[in-house]
Length: 330
Ligand code: NAX
Image 1 (cartoon, rainbow, N blue to C red):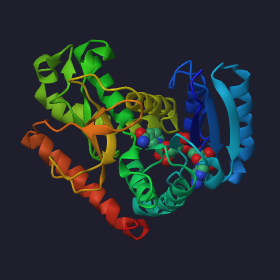
Image 2 (image 1 turned 45 degrees about the vertical axis):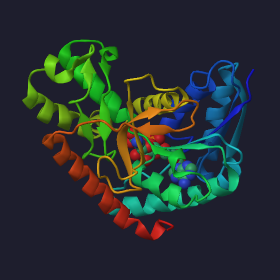
Image 3 (image 1 turned 90 degrees about the vertical axis):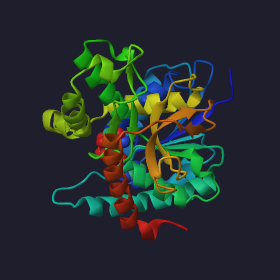
């Protein structure tokens, strides 16, 4: 067996946590030869429920599960971890403005950034809790000793949603869709880039000739999918979000094959797409493998249609950054 991997999950008693933890413990993500040590982190009021989840995980008899610890604070829960999956955050309450939610949840990520700085070093951080791009930015600013490239936010669910829509329209299996990059914010301004994606190795626009559908129905279906799920299910996406989180970690664990890419929100370096440096922005990226980093794909030629959409999502992220500027350590 290899050295154990220690994985912390915040919001472990929540609905995404319930779909996520079992798959991590099962060996699906880190391999059947890697013992998994889970660190479940919750608010004190949800610790009891977390204990119930932990009992169920134990009862699955996963051979890769080494141990489970439960914490109600991040200083202890992040101690020596290799992966931090930051899922826990506060949902938007009735009558609450988006900026109030951004500020409220921002404080959680100030504290978690500071705890990561104290308690962990060789760690990769994935922010799922919304607004995930800006929460990742806050955590990263409050965690000066860990390189910014270790912080990501999840836009894999948006990528998976976009691929599913294209596959349905083209009448093919979703495995035929490749290189579907999401640009920008995980919000309704996100940009699902159909212009560089392929279906069975051919450009999407050669297979789906209805450009109007791609620019309108496809775009808005992907952008508003989260709201459509809440409307239908009465609850927000959970199993699909957990599955996307698994996909995100797996993508960073392996070297991305030549010519392929996937979507993740990472710190902008300012070029080549003129996105303000430092913003946690979703790009097409390629992993260098073993969770050791990534490169932003540099050679994507953007049409004026895509550039306009990307400008709108950039503006939204800059506005979010302005709302939380007092939480960002220079
Ligand atoms: P739930 O409300 O079911 O669970 C959240 C859990 O987090 C609760 O158990 C709560 O006690 C815990 N929590 C809150 N503050 C905490 C803190 N400071 N430390 C530790 N735990 C804390 O929400 P769930 O459906 O699991 O969603 C979690 C987050 O994921 C939400 O912010 C949600 O908006 C976000 N999502 C992000 C997605 C993405 O693609 N990036 C998609 C799905 C989801 O909407």
